[in-house]
Image (cartoon, rainbow, N blue to C red; front, side, top):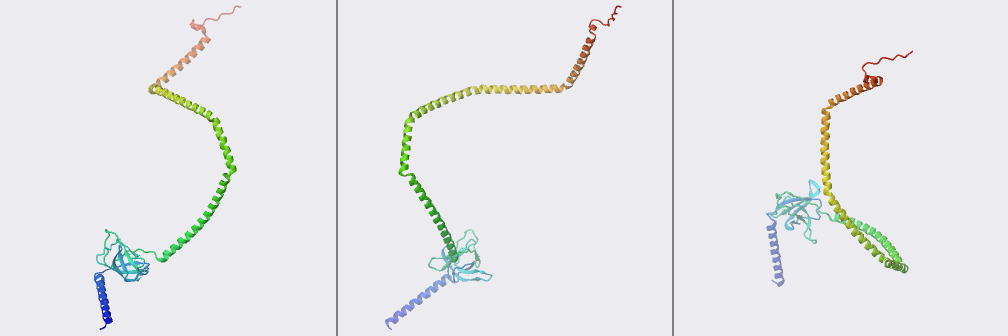
Length: 307
């Protein structure tokens, strides 16, 4: 046997051993002990049988079938198998994912909640739709259009702002020109001269205002002291006046009660006074007509006129 034949036989033997080892490992990992589940998506994103199933980012199974669901052809039925003991629960959510950018799509399942009930074999895993590349591209195109319009608006506003800024700078340059600088310098010199002339008067006025302020403070303090001194006597007088008013009120109440109790007596007294007044009127009239009745009982005889 030649050297080439020996090398070829050795290579074939190594390939056969490697193939047998891979088949054995694959059978030991997936054969016999896998637990079936299913889930449903509206967009499979190129998911194929044999794709990895990730539970919390850990490779724990594989996809066995990807097909339209006979009960609802608008949804894709995905059959999968996971290792025994994988804690899929009712809070776990299946969605389309990637192991890495260079790899094919995979089915990603979240860990859910430890308090949630475990899913029995063969049950459906809740799913969440992932955005397709077309949807992402559409959103990016819409965003790009909006950004382009925004940039155009910003460019117009920027041009307007630039124009206004140039006008402001031109006005500022005009204001700060040599002629205006000289005018400002003259005004400042006049102000300085006026301040120099009026400084003694301002100082004198400040002294007077200070003295007036001190006098005002003293006056306020005197008034405050006077009010403080008069406060207690005034309170006492007001208290006595209140007591007097209360006594007067009680006296008026008693008089009202007495008047109400003697109301009929007052009526009798008034009637007696009226009768007495009538009698007095009659007596007065009688005295006017017969004044002699005060000294004589009988009327004197009439004198005869001599003939």
